[in-house]
Amino acid sequence: MSDDQSREQHEGQTNFGHGRDGHNHNGHGRECHDDPDVRDPDDPDVRDPDDQHAREQEDKAPEPNQKDCRCDSSTIDTHLCKSEGLAREADFASKQKTDIDSTIQSYTKVRKEYPNLRKELLPQVNEITEQLERVQERIRCAMPKNTTAKRLDEAFEAILRTVEKCAGSLPTCVVEPCDFDLDVRGLELVGARRKLAEYEGKMATYRKCMLELLEEPTNLSARLAASVAAVKTLAEALAADPDADKLKQLYVEARVAERDVKLIWSGYNSASEYVDRLCLTLDCWLAAVDMATILTGRLGVLECRERSAAKRCKEMADNIVGETVMRYERDRAAGVRPAESDGTQSEPDFADDVAIR
Image (tube, rainbow, N blue to C red; front, top):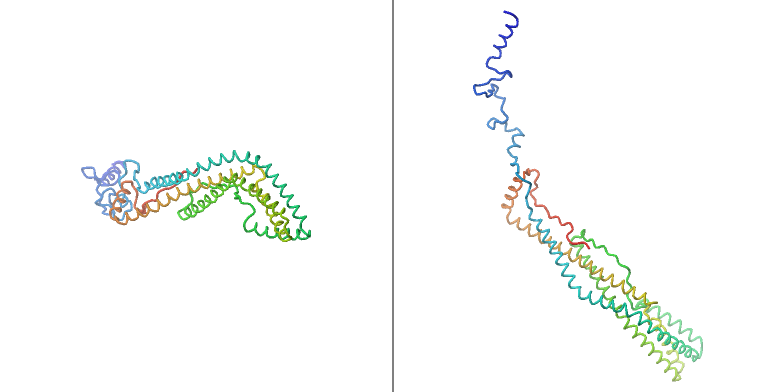
């Protein structure tokens, strides 16, 4: 027997009953493991209970057949609260509409009429100013000593400074240009309430100033009439040959009349200066109304969110079992693993709760 034939016979004896991979095969073509430690990983009857892969396969939820369509009911509150905020805005704005319409109508009328009124009254103001100067000169000449007039002037100026410091020299409101930030999305409940109170105060202040300014044409005529009457009274008293004490009183009255004549125009050096102040005050008042309207809407959204959150919490607390089972079924259907779910319900996204104008 040759060496090759001997080697083939030896290999045939060695591999008797085995495949080329060295494993036993039965008549059905299945592998038979003589080693009890060798298990088929796909056979659940022999799967190693400590095998991590096996546990993951058992815990794994069935693959969803479509996209995750879970609906978080809390997102409904987003729409409801936004609607409530917009409704509050609309209600607040409608309550301001009557005042706004009537004020704009008055503004348009006064803006047109004031320049003409000022031109009409200017000659009368100049005339009463000249009459007062003549009366003052006559009183000064009738006084026994010039030093008396000087001392009266000093006393009058001191009193006038005190009065102007505590009461103001002009009856008109002083309004600075206003530029409000209308974006209130970052405000939370406490801040929104505080801001709303602040701008409601601004609304009241600007509104009061606006009403005063709209009365300026009427008040202008009244101030001129009062000055005319005061100068006439001084002239009549001087003609009655007053004594020294009466002359001192008349001199001070003339100084008061002088101040009143200077205030006939209420500090406005021209018609355009008054109209600009009127326009600025109206603009600031309307801006404050806009801001208060938006803040009212924002506050409505935030208060709605607070109520909705409390309601959701109570509903969940009253139905813990049902909510838990529902959460489990939803997460399992969506393929969410237990470690990825914290068991809480997400909060709604309230971005851009109210329209920012």
